[in-house]
Image (cartoon, rainbow, N blue to C red; front, side, top):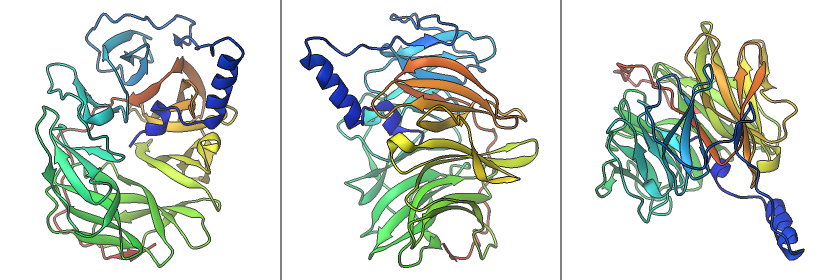
Length: 374
């Protein structure tokens, strides 16, 4: 998922500063959301039609906005009460907000907010006609639809605790991390929770964090925490594999909260969000020749990889600097040259709405990946 902590205040330091300001008879100043040019983000919304190239989106002044990074054209999309995950469906025409609320463009289905606010969600592929999420305090996987309605139980393995779930690009399956009998593992099942199959079984002390499918749908990426408390990012082909090579090796105590793979110039690149805490998180780009990862914003303080802005060969990455209870500044980072440029300042949440390839990749007929150690 792209970043619940980016959308919510989470820093005790920020709370302390706010309390101090109020205690001195004043109130904490609120930074004005503005484009890099200095133009303020409007406080009122005249909803317009977002162009397909307006793939950078953010929440500011109670509304969601779309920005074309080349023309700098800004379009107001809809009002936002609580951003929550603020994640776009695979066609870029519907967004998931807090409490399973769905706001839409181009007459796509919409859903009113409810009482459930899951910690892990994933849009159904290839058009986003369903949402799968971790429910019942982590003990089930449930499905719902963006046009409303109840929940469908698609729990593949009973008596387990679920951490993450992610749809396969084909829409025919989803992968998930579960914990059962003290052990964590990575599984895959059909999109209705049938035929569950274990892909990766951790050793006794192994835990799993982020999870993502490759663009072509033939491989899966996962972050595994090992006995000495360091985390590795692995890749595993879905067919015929008997090992899961390490793509990136982390330091003890670090966590990986997001994995964003992409192909650029015919080569694989992976954006990661890595850190020991919110204040130490950083966005990294991992590619051939830089397996240790290169900081996307080396001098910007805490940062997170939000999503890929375009599908050109250079593949610009949207990176958010700040958060942890403070506003976000958004940058476009060229994943080849690593040059960055400021796009917008002082926003509440951010996401990209880059449509996925259509028709989607197929699900491998023979999911023959042997259950691998990590």
